[in-house]
Length: 201
Image (cartoon, rainbow, N blue to C red; front, side, top):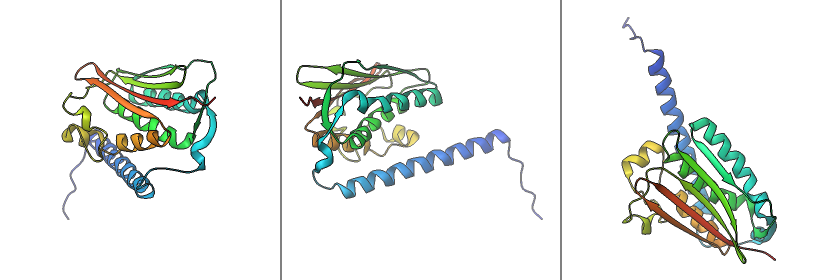
């Protein structure tokens, strides 16, 4: 009978971790592809017109960010003003877009780095800002990052489990809410993604 070589516990742990990462990435890909299949054209529906406060929209993301920071050894900073302002939105759908942005921020921020979530209230709109001090995006790639399946660095994306769909889906959702999503980034200092949504008065 052939002897099975001993595998160190650390190696086994690494293998299990890699399998879990791959399974999570595949599950995310399937979920994103199903979303795109359901929403091949512009997103519409009465659910987009639910009256909700910006604070109600963002507080679950605050809790999500805190949990991710604890798990991934990052610092999470949030600034959500107490002043209640109202928007029209499908909260679940909009949170999906913002979660995609938060996930990217954590994904590309090194250990002990910082991810920020900020709400800015303006006269006619709100700005939801997600900032990181991660690797940053080259200027030549910025115009294309919202394209489906576009990846800035395929090697880095494979390592982090990205497939180039999260930003495209986020943009599709934000546009359905009559909003706008923009990005600014510098290689080294990190990236800032901003979602602008109209206030409901």
